[in-house]
Image 1 (cartoon, rainbow, N blue to C red):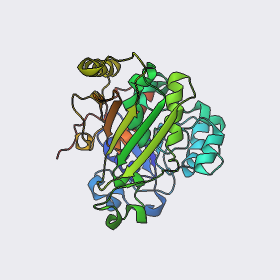
Image 2 (cartoon, rainbow, N blue to C red):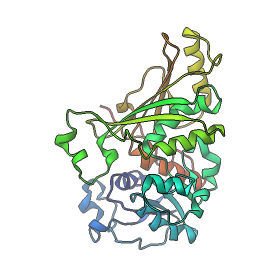
Image 3 (cartoon, one colour):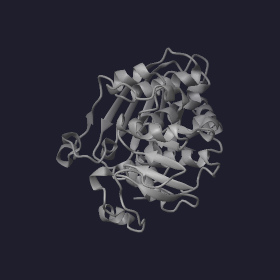
Image 4 (cartoon, rainbow, N blue to C red):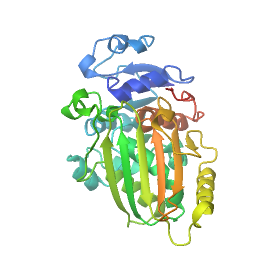
Length: 344
């Protein structure tokens, strides 16, 4: 199948090109990036010089599927005509994740250009929406923070085992802020520093809440989401804190055993979600499409502590997008993604 990437020059776009380079069924035929239009991909990214393509201002070849790695608002404007023409699209921006156009406008300060497509778009967290993704024309790739949080919480939330007042604490590497330089991701500002941000409400909060509500059919979640920027390039570590419903888990060691068993049963057969027997580390997912989850019970107060690790550019962006593409074309989910993490 023939593949196009809109905005190959951003971090998600270049990661897509890297992963697609050895995909057994995908041929990358067209790439865009207006700031570098006219240059060979290898001139901008020497590690991808084997991909003999010139960056264009617009897609210049017919394709079976297009990935958009543009920022929100611009992405919708670019992909809506493609969707209308019947081209399959995986949008890595936030433009099609939220189902309510008014919620989108409130959080992204823009009127959605195609509100009719919001309901049609499939939320592409493959492990939770596999059947819908396989039939989709337009897939909304999940945000990086929601990916780690939702996979950490899903086994308990879907079975109604936790109270709906949940705290989500996430720490991300700097690449999550994109490739354009800002004061917030300047090396001198980030190095040897940790800071929380989005305390008044991060844009991924409505996405997380929406998907938790869809799991349960209940709109009573109270989510506190606190993201942090930490001085590393890749990775997201998420810790979710929730109270089990009365009687849902036994106390002590037996409760921990049942919790692990629950998670292992829920994710049995999933190629990219690994339930660990000890707390995960971001290095264990560096460069691959895995999400490592570790659920635990605080033996002193009974609170559940549910942690996950992902690479924000792979499972949190490009790898998840390719996993969705594989499903959309009836390919093995692991095609082009079966790589171990890079360590150290």
